[in-house]
Length: 464
Image (cartoon, rainbow, N blue to C red; front, side, top):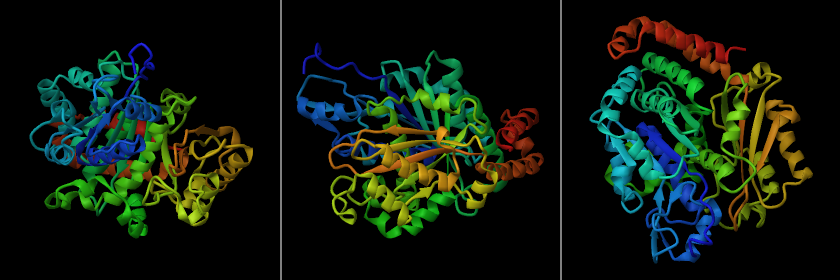
């Protein structure tokens, strides 16, 4: 393909993964995106123009760089992904498992020395005074995208110190210190207390600060909860075991710290990849549309509802369960009937009915075979009404082109006040715990005044 006739490259989207959790989830989501474009994550090269054309038709160069584009027999794929952590171990494992994919390792990784002790204030301080002084952030981003950036997707855990504070500081950096007009989408995972290695009181304070930064700097904030993800991974354990994961490519001696999160990350990655597909597969919908959708919402947060919760073991191919109709609206309805769907947030059904507001809304991302006609829309509308009582006028439907024999998938991003009680409970714990932690956080630069203001902002955002 000559450069004269080459299609215009779309503005790219960078995935910036922060902390152990963010790197694990981001890597899993990227692996799925690579499979979606027909690429092998372990041998990420395109062999000639035909192979390149096939990949371009799926995602263009939105999430991948082709450095020798339109020339040469072997064209390497370079993920537009940045892995950031104070502790380099998580990033190193991904680099070791995918050495060919992350061949430009210095461009893909930013790290420090040792973690932030589950202390959000320490993480923020060290990001500003250690990491950004050691690394030229603009140069790092330019290495992944020489072109102007369209947006950033940012997965991270909200209860820890390093990943959460780094994600917060990075969002502020992009919005305040760069000339980018990029849209920021954050994917924050709330911990399951008593299971995840977080300190309860400190985690509550960390979550409040993360929510404040998402309110200020994230255009589209999506929340997951590890409690719900863990329940689903256990419920569908037999199915999850059959699914290929990035965990399966890690050296056996290093699996211990990751394997408990395999199913959880696979389920969450399903939603993240659908989010990216919604604006990367040549549709009417752009990433910036999420910003407009949530601009006046209260709270300015969304939670995912995925159908199916667990894909079939073979992502590509016929779905035996539906008699060869595995990529139609009919099979989506069947998944609902068989309870193979899930809201990826720890929310009680009574909260949805009692505390959901009249102005609740949703964006339904629909990847099915066919035209998605009135009859099929009605099926999905009725499902949404039954579960969330959202008015039709506040539903947005985004049709994502489905490819070959790819499986059908629907991910519904729901903006609802019903998530308020869960967040306000955490905020209450943070307020009660602050006096015991204010000296430790204060020596790293988080003042009582700043914390109290953030607490007020979060409570206001999530109150009915």
